[in-house]
Length: 241
Image 1: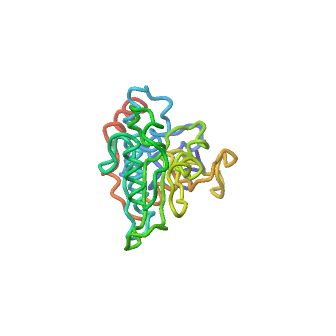
Image 2 (image 1 turned 90 degrees about the horizontal axis):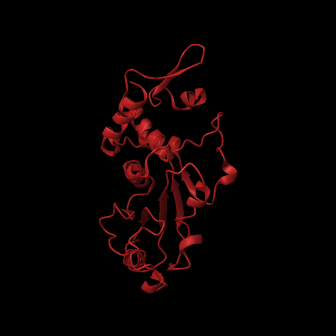
Image 3 (image 1 turned 180 degrees about the vertical axis):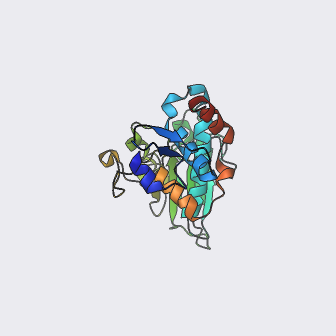
């Protein structure tokens, strides 16, 4: 915890320690970045939340990931949410969503509607999608797909959800896409030079809590717009007051 204060700094880290380092306290004066940190911290504790309320944590985290994903994509890229509850472009049955995505990236969906459960309106492991249209109607375009996961266990398998290893059997494109995985956990080692639990990682570009906050700060994102303040306040009143 002391190393996190060192790496995040007073402006971003919402806690402080007593002189003997025996106890941790919430700061009396909290800025927007402190609240943003708390939002990610709460999402990382998904397993402690009742299942009926988990969407209150996963939904805002996907919104945060979407904001960061847009920052990471170069100018001219098209970026959309694909998740089942958030997308305004990809709606309906999963087969229809993937078919439209295949058209968007000048590819082909090599499967049948009958291969899917007739009630499957999910996201197929995709939360965020991006590509550059390259100014014409030919294939061979750059693409990036992302999965957002709040789970603290078995995240290695979740990292593969948006990868060609899972989807390329059915989604045929001319060029394999880059895979991203967003997670609210802070996977920074104490010295700040490596990943925690790196042996559990799968092949994906990982964007953890540290990267999310630092990137949001770098691009001057208005974090008030992507936080769920009522959830944070409820947690504060339950835990600290």
